[in-house]
Amino acid sequence: MQQRIKDILHRGQLGDRVTVRGWVRTKRELKECTFVNLNDGSTLAGLQVVIPNTLAAATPWIKNLTTGAAVEFRGELVLSPGKGQALELHAQQMHLWGAADAESYPLQKKRHSFEFLRTIAHLRPRTNTLGAVMRVRNACAMAIHQFFQERGFLWVHTPIITASDCEGAGELFTVTTLNLAQPPKTPAGEIDFSQDFFGRRAYLTVSGQLEAEIMATALTNVYTFGPTFRAENSNTSRHLAEFWMVEPEMAFCDLKGDMELAEAFLQFVFRSVLDHCAEDLAFFQERIDNSVMATAEQMASQSFARLSYTEAIQILEKSSRPFEFPVAWGLDLQSEHERYLAEEYCQRPVIVYDYPATLKAFYMRLNEDGKTVAAMDVLAPKIGEIIGGSQREERLEVLQQRLASQGLDPAPYWWYLDLRRYGSVPHAGFGLGFERLVQFMTGMDNIRDVIPFPRTPGNAEF
Ligand code: 4AD
Ligand code: MG
Image 1: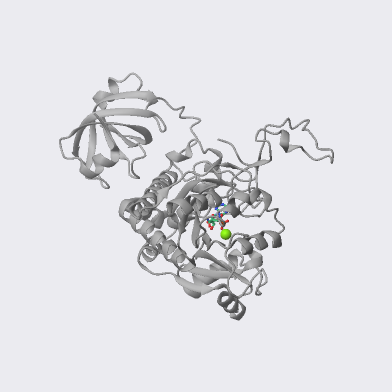
Image 2: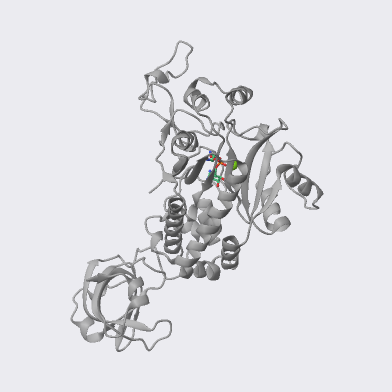
């Protein structure tokens, strides 16, 4: 039976007969034999395969045994005299699944820049770094589901196509089947979306929250985990046009409960990835960022700092740091401010809460002071905002006023307002940017390198 290299390296015994399949990373020809390093993506380290000259001589396709080729080996595990591995595979039979043109294969032994690797996203999962990223991503996703499932949250599936702008920021991609060359027009000369596929203008969702609130006011504790889309034209190392978001929503929960859940959640995910992906994290520590392990340990065990927005502004005003963007009560925190608070002032993740109402979305609950809302952002060192959440406005009249003060037409929100008419309860939730989490965990500089196929302004290849 075919075995995965991870299992062979962890559990293989001297004398075991194994069959492995994978892609050749490197090949070294010596006088007596040929060494191949084979990788199948199950683990960072490849399996060292030794091909005796007798086998090589009897193999007509031996010239095709090159870097990038897909090959199968059968043989026996023997003690490895070389450094770096206890056992190696002594090949007795081999089969070529797919040759790789050695001349043009773009992944050569030297280290490639991440910029270059993005241009070959169809091959970059075969590199050590992208392989490790994908395993950590997978471990994070597993841990996220485990965390919520163990606590009785239901995973609910919210739509990708929607007619509402949850965040009210207007960063929406339109979904249409209208003839773009000649769209139907209203008498006023605007595009007539009533003739479009959905009978109205539709978009790719920016968040599953509004629908998650529907589900939470029936099922109590739910979460979404799916793709979300933002048409913000920001070419930064932290923004994607398509990213995955995890959004828990809890009925009978206030902002304090929301912050406690966010903290317990991140701690759990970091602990779980430390337990399941230690080898990959050690790789990031060695190659990418030498604080990865310490950060993960800290995230898994230490509590987060907490500051109200008002306190945060006071701290920023007092700091001697020459910030590029202005600091004043009522202005949004920029990435440089967020990073200063987390990296330098608190030296750990910090939850900033109670933001000015004018800065935040219409659905956030208005505080007693009438100026701030029960919002919270979790700010992580080096990344800045990783989670954004809030207690939701459950009072019908206040919510109607909030929609009006943000200039939003209440009509399309009729069902959202209905939730406040029928059994309304205090409820709260948050959204975790999944790629920002993976970025934070791996120390990768650019968010485009922690998702297999990044979508950013100008880029939708692959
Ligand atoms: O703060 P945001 O906009 O919050 C919401 O969408 C709420 N509806 C969430 C909720 O309460 N259920 O986005 C949440 C998180 C951010 O903290 C950030 O980590 C991530 O989503 N995010 C992005 N990640 C990558 N690329 C982008 N363009 C992102 N925009 C937001
Ligand atoms: Mg936010």
